Image (tube, rainbow, N blue to C red; front, top):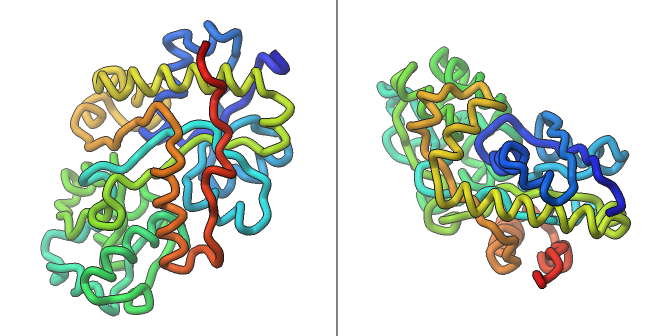
Length: 291
């Protein structure tokens, strides 16, 4: 193996739970790999870190990745991580808000964690169904943990919120769901995966294959046993065991499927997040066939 200790970037949210499961269960160790998780601030911010070698592999969201590839970044997707399910990513409003339908968002301010990313893309698909475009609303950036208070204090009208903050804003602030943004065009939308640079993947094929096998094994466990996820999440996030047991989770695919991911790139093209089509197959590094 070319490299036996690697640094892997991850956000402290439920999506990359398999990284921690694979460490805790010894799946990386079985492969002869030592994995050091490093907390990152976001997928886009991690791109320079994999480029300069301070991270070997990092979590990324697919929208950021495809935008970066179009901009000329030599990135490869090496494993899948997280796919949306119902009520994972909702537009939330205060319970006494006059906003009762997506159409009521016209002229309103919606908080998102990042502009021109999966947040704004998902909201825009729902605006379209309601006869609006992104030009009918104002998007403003705010980290997820700060959204609830910002909306409650009147700085914004609504927020695109994910777990555990959906549960938190409902229980602590009495917010209600206006819309599930992962329906229609975005149903079961792939959200996040693992990336490396093209150069790193070419130079470390055995290390990468070992990482892929261990992650796939952990994803399979996560998919089959929610209790494993609930036990692991509080170890690397600020989510308590009580909240971990009630939050709505997405799904954890064990293989990287180009057709599924193509849907993300095609949506980005439709909503002008990309100028040209991207062939997702060309940026996936599939694990070597077993045997």
